[in-house]
Length: 110
Image (tube, rainbow, N blue to C red; front, side):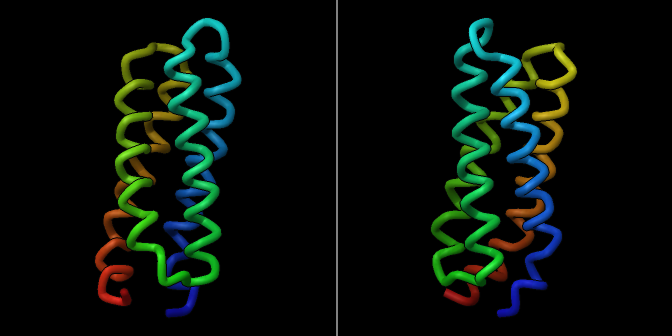
């Protein structure tokens, strides 16, 4: 399946990773659990963007982890009023929505 079919999901993954990286930096020291979840989320989103870019057959495996990690990160960030946390939570929710759209495509390909 051509990577173009994943383009909106790739864009959402990259945006989520970017927001998570920023949030993690802002939360270091003051909110360590938030920072840890944001780092995990950023890493998995960078990873899935690569998998989708090359239409990897392992997308179904990775996308399930992405959904779980992004949801955990969003849940944590939504508890904080800081703008960077709210932006991160929004990006995570958007990524989850995109990952759910592609998971059907990816699963059918497996």
